[in-house]
Image (cartoon, rainbow, N blue to C red; front, side, top):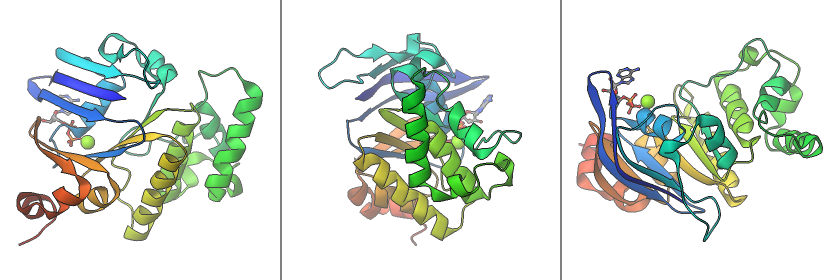
Length: 241
Ligand SMILES: Nc1ncnc2c1ncn2[C@@H]1O[C@H](COP(=O)(O)OP(=O)(O)O)[C@@H](O)[C@H]1O
Ligand SMILES: [Mg+2]
């Protein structure tokens, strides 16, 4: 569904991505783990068209057996319309809009009003708190509730591929569990997931496959289970002695 080929991205004076290649297949949950500054956010921002690569290709094939699109030549809006939705780092909710208005913003490219109303209801059923607190300003929600709101908002564009940037950041372990269960459910409803995390333990437990990013280069990849048992991963990312 998504294939990065020899992707190079510079940010200011930093060579943030140094020729990375990775693949996400339809129906998978793939995790990209790595320390602060490794290039995880840069990777997602480049896929969703917020940053331009200096070299390489980003091939997205929304339909099985369809023609791939090269996202590195497309604008961010067109990338959303093609089926990619990005939950950015830091839970960016609109503080002066209500929770329900925040949700509806996710459908800004759609014109199918009846289907939008139905999707709002479905998302409120998935996250009951978003219905209960539908008329309060977005910034009155707790951190975990805001995370649910940004995931719900991202689903409002009916993505085929969901990009998530550190959904566990700053959340209590129990909430992280809850968010990761939701990601399982989203996948079971047919949405493919590319998840970026510093919380390697949780991410490797959830992911079918994972890649390890170090200083802009991919250094390891494998199934979530294999990487969780890899001695180097355990030492560097799982806090094992
Ligand atoms: N806005 C920016 N301008 C210049 N350099 C940046 C910017 N944001 C990040 N970088 C640099 O790009 C590299 C990758 O950062 P980032 O993708 O944010 O890493 P991660 O998400 O893994 O923590 C780092 O060296 C970081 O300092
Ligand atoms: Mg980041």
